[in-house]
Amino acid sequence: MAIQVISRDGQPEYAVVPWDQYQALLKAAGQPEAVSAEAQTTTEAASSPASVPSLSRLAVLREAKGIPAEQLARKVGISPAYLAMIESGERVPDSAIRRSLAWELGLSGWSDPS
View 1 (cartoon, rainbow, N blue to C red):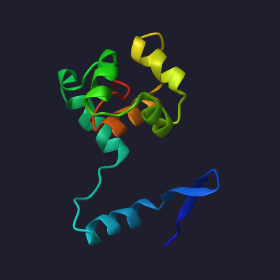
View 2: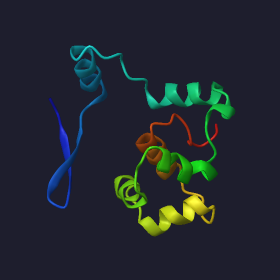
View 3: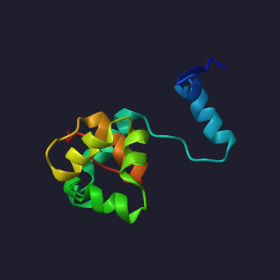
View 4: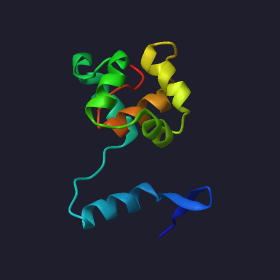
């Protein structure tokens, strides 16, 4: 298995595996197959925008999940100050940060509209 390990501060943080090997791991674990990014983009474009909360609700969603701002910022890879600017509407994050925020909050949206 060709695995790439990505470290942060000298500690392993992510393992990257080829897509077909990832699918095999999911199957072995009894999980449904993952959808490719291309297929996911098509599915997201077809889903109704009303199902995705507005970024203006980010602070409310974060607080409802009991996640401190500093912890969410650290997990997403941004500073707490930048997260505060996003939450206040001062800044609009790029698509990678939106996806990461959605992932950490368990949401399906906030990607670029297609």
